[in-house]
Length: 138
Image (cartoon, rainbow, N blue to C red; front, side, top):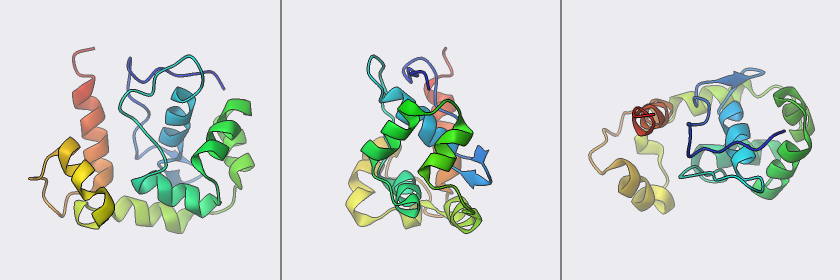
């Protein structure tokens, strides 16, 4: 896949799905931004929700980025990552709220999003709104 510069536009929505799995298209975009010659900006994979996805596929960040680098399409990334039915994981990811942010990520989360985010706020909504806000001027 071709590199993607995430300083120019945000990755796909965390609600975007590939084979029913939310977050996966967004993760592909962020992995494309980790390829040589581009900038992922503030985006990362391997922590938070993307860590759950990678764990479900039994992959680490470097393995996932390598799969993305060699693949020709989103579908190929999905299949080379392990494919399968991840509908249960998708349901879990969609329900995660700020209250679910693990303690080891809490300080970084609050530094980035603020400490006043309601605990019942869904993380996918927060991620989507943050991307729209960051690139509203472009």
